[in-house]
Length: 266
Image 1 (cartoon, rainbow, N blue to C red):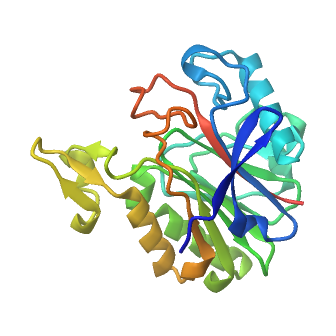
Image 2 (image 1 turned 45 degrees about the vertical axis):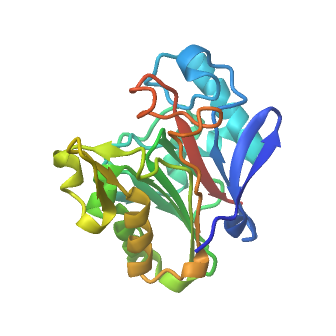
C-alpha cells in the first residue's frame, strides 16, 4: 500500500493523479482540486456541482476545463446523483445521455462500473472518499463515492463484488486509487455517526465526540476483498486541512464547492 499521488498543472488547473493507475495503458484518470475554474466566492474556482451557490454556466465551463485537462471529451462524463448509499450500477455507452453531459443519470447509486470505452465515470466529493478502480486484465473500471454512510455499509466491498460477478474480475488484478479525503483528526462525529463503525476506527475525545478513520475502514475493506497491498494507492492529503487545494464540507460548514474524480477507458 502506497501513496504515489502527484500534482499536475494543466492550463491553470491542478490535478491529482495516481502513478499506479497512470501505468495502465488505455486509461485516463484524475482527481480535481479547487483551482483553475471560473466560479467565485465560496465556490472559487473549479466547482463541479450544480446544487451550490453557483451558476449553471460556470459549472458547465468548469466541467469542460476538467475534461480537457484530463485529455477527454466533456460529453463523455457520466454522473450519478449521489445518495450516500451502498448501491452500485453497471453502465453502458448509452448512459452518456446522448451527449447531454451536463445532466445526471437519475439514480440512487454511489458507485458505477463499466467496460465501455469513452464513458468517463465521475463522482463528486468535498471530504468523502473517492476511489477509482481498474481491472488491468478484464478492461473494467469503476468509480466509487464513499461517504461515511456508504463506508459503514461497505460500498467498496459491494463494488468489487459486482465487478467479480458481472465481469469475472479477479481481486488480485484490480488496482485501486483512493483520492484525498477527510482524515480521522478532522472528521469528529457524535454517537449516531461513530456508532456505525467498529471501535478500532474510533478515537474518543473528552467532549463526547470521536474521530472516525474512514480511510482505515476503506483500506481494510479493500484487503478483505482480496486486493493486493501493492495494488492500492491511497492519497494522504486531507481535504479539510488544505484550503489551498481542496473544497471541504466540514471546514466550510457546507458553504463550499465540490471536487470530482473521474476515470475513462480509451
